[in-house]
Image (cartoon, rainbow, N blue to C red):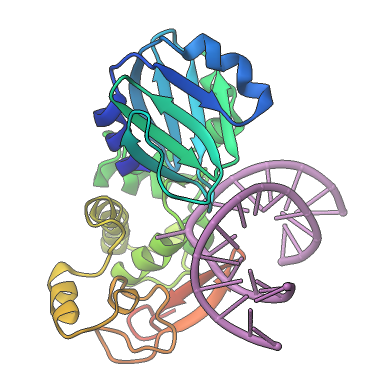
Length: 267
DNA sequence: TCTTTATGGTGAG
DNA sequence: TCACCCTAAAGAT
């Protein structure tokens, strides 16, 4: 979503919208109100996308598992069977959201009334979220006695971390998912905060490849399939750990799949 | 042509 | 924790 926000900003940000179209009837009145206005700034808050207009109103979208943004020159549409849900266009370019169902428009100043926004915790990709800030956040009283495996999926804890990053962060910091912030020593806490920060930003750069760059290059050259080398442990159950050669395990935590190396991430 | 799964999220109990 | 919502693609039959 962070990459998408950058793309929307560079394609149509700061420009007058000549087209603002919503697939949902309840939002139809906003079509007229926003057409002709300038799309001033595109932000993310965790996985949410916020399209801010010059009058202070804001389109909120969340892709959930389904949404997909596509970009085309003005007047063109991508070749897809997906359902168009939101279209934004300037004189020159269009940004098109397909399949997503979580779309709302918020009036100026009403941002915090949106339940997802109101609940969102520290946004790992925000400028304030450096390693020190993340480390301090993790040991906050509200979180210090909850298991890391559950915390990492909670958007009220850290906004933006999702299911594949959960497994990857725990692997890189060498921690078992059942540990709690209160259990960690200074070095482990620091390592965890560094892993959160590093892997989120690495994912932005690499389009979601969390494995070490050198290893990715090497395995790609060796003819490995992308799905088998892009992560340390995620989606690799049955295969061996890159660090210790022992098989990766899969468990269910918070109702989602979590992958771990039993040797590199002891209890 | 089914059933299942998914890098997500809510609300009830 | 579970049932449920949402949509599309992958997997099974």
